[in-house]
Length: 265
Image 1 (cartoon, rainbow, N blue to C red):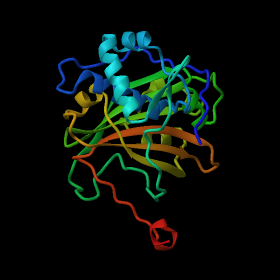
Image 2 (image 1 turned 120 degrees about the vertical axis):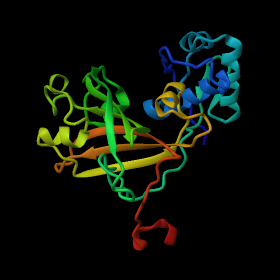
Image 3 (image 1 turned 60 degrees about the vertical axis):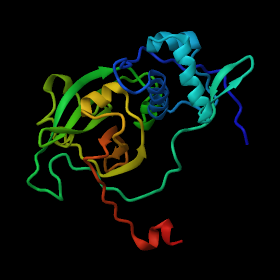
Image 4 (image 1 turned 90 degrees about the horizontal axis):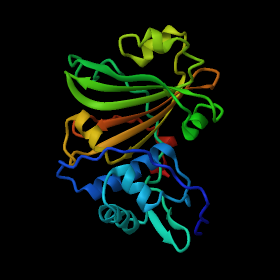
């Protein structure tokens, strides 16, 4: 059944596009809009910004912008409604398959114990509220968030970009203290906090040009994003994170019990 559109209009702030990239600009814009959808959890039926607003946000002409919108329309991601404009009509996220995936270690590679796996902090700051993320963390819509962005490196080569959002009331003084050894696990433990359970979702995505530069890869390298929500023992949300992994330098091992696997039903 088709979903009715809402009157809500999405806002997209200034975005970065690499005009020197071999990836067509309109394709970069289309991919970036789909990436924003996965992060912001926009509702199906929401109106996307006007062509003028999008052209200004991406710094491109309307001709180029229309090529991007045409690509999104062909994919069924947006549709045009007379008198309304373009609205989101489908999610680019595939159907989720539930698997038992443990937390990802920040310190070692189990297949290569001699490899050096570490993290570099890119951002550690207080940011304004984000409705979907505040909902994940069980916070009200006005609560500010601690935002941490890190680059994961293996043998000094980038393998992933990690973005974490936390409740500042659970980690007071973090901006002044900084992170312990650039490790989220060690930092949280310094506050007496430890993840008791983690819910993970894995999905293929397209990177922004800025993320491709950080990961030192071209547009043809496969990318996987792991979204994680961790809880302390009392089942209170602890951390929401998204980690963008280079598909050519990472693999995941997942153990599924036969009796619990939908593959055996």
